[in-house]
Length: 170
Image 1 (tube, rainbow, N blue to C red):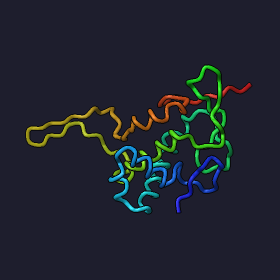
Image 2: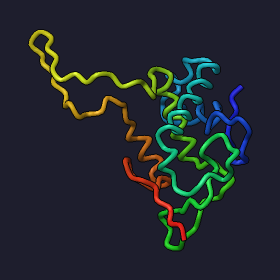
Image 3: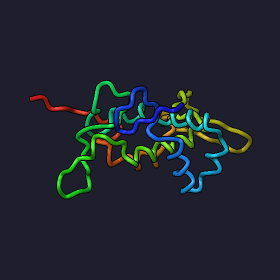
């Protein structure tokens, strides 16, 4: 049984969204065939893997702070500003924002067919098959990136990739 974080700091939470949420999300975007071809067991595992990916990629980038040191996941959070308002306001600290749930559902679809956190392999510098030749930059990362997910989450991210989170101590 998938344990889903609702914003109430659920012990042992494994996912930012439910299978039902992901079903609705994918049906609305025409992904329902790819998503529903799998059973609930596979969909739950895909949501766990998507959440694991989000923990690895975004933990140090989120705005604000985790609400409790005892929570399993990065959300709920406190002091997360709503960036597109004239007056400074913060999102509620007892929710998992809809964009975070959507990102989790979107990543879960990918997780059904690929390893989101695959190990990096040695970079190919030159490869020739018949008359087709491919050469990759020796400095390019082999890690997959998902710009759609970064864009979904950008309003909740405080820092760009590679930036350090700094806290001023008085």
